[in-house]
Image 1 (tube, rainbow, N blue to C red):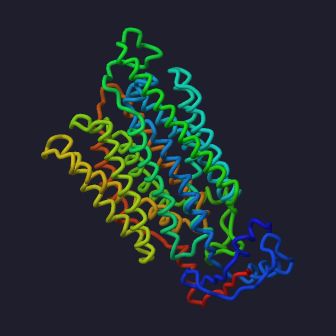
Image 2: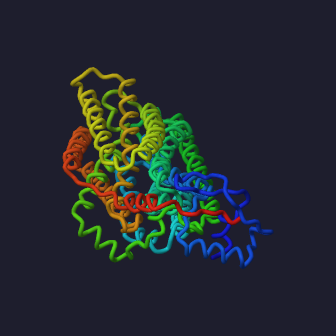
Image 3: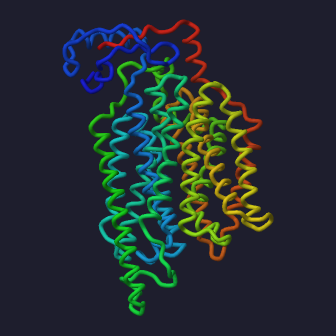
Length: 504
């Protein structure tokens, strides 16, 4: 065992995680230097592992924080261009179709490496996976800062979006694996929820910081100054120069933060704790190839994956295109940005709150998900009716509706991950999460490809959202689910708590 792996175990202070998963005062073994533990200390750690002891480490919260920050920045970078669609027309000369292509580059970046992502997380561990994702995140954000020239800038943005998506392919898979590796059974859903809904904070950045740093053009009947603005007035030329400068500054700030995330991961992010936090965490998982076959040959698990993935894919793109979708009822780019901010804040709070409540009611994940999906269906149908003038419109009520949808769906997503991992156990959490991510991004690509159909408009997006939510509820209701992982932890708890010591 390396010194870096022992540091959490050989930390200052005295903690003893008991059967309830909390850190409580316990017996400690004193050492003179935690950075260079003695052979005796190493032997004691190995002996504790051999006896099957479990332990909960306070450093799990730091690792969760770093992971959540990376998830936040990945989503912030991915969602840059939806809220800035009109400004991007000035800087790069994009129209709605090109915006869809750029977003799809990110979706392709997530989708193409996903099978390799499952291998990376399940075989190489959390440290290598986080180093890979944070590096790709830094590269993807950096490429966008090189040029704002129309052709070169567009190419670099597309490549950067692909790299960002590749980083997202890893970060989508890591939360359930992190919670299983570092957190006790009564904190797993909460930990997964925090890491998963951190993408909502990224949406807050994309929908608020971006539109407030980059001006919306006053005239949108012309494109980039550098390519087609020879006949523009001097006023429009100055406006284009100002928007281009603001866009570049915003992209540089994103790049700096992503570099900081890579440094944090490189400095400290161990692959696993010296002792596992639960009985199921130390259980041997199926190897990668066998795990893949097991997922494919379990129809109920595949159905769970589809039922969870498609609604989330539709939601993500529906949120990203709000300025286009609600333009006919007078929603501007800046107002759509505020809607996104409200939705992201609601999703962040709702996701963590619902995850914590679900931890208090084990084996009720399916019931929670069905209830959340039904409520989402009702709100989406109401907003669709408002947008199509079947009922009176209200921008205030529209903002409330979007926020409620985000809260409900962000609360449901981590529960979906956890339920799929419970049903698939002993398949590695990274492999199960990979299949969910593949389904999410495949559905997202299809959703955006439909947008490329000439003259299709945007009405179909809302009705598709209604139909998807209704179909998901109908598929979930008769489905039987298993809680294999929790059953193992409960059997161990009934047999008696493990002796847990901190060697400090």
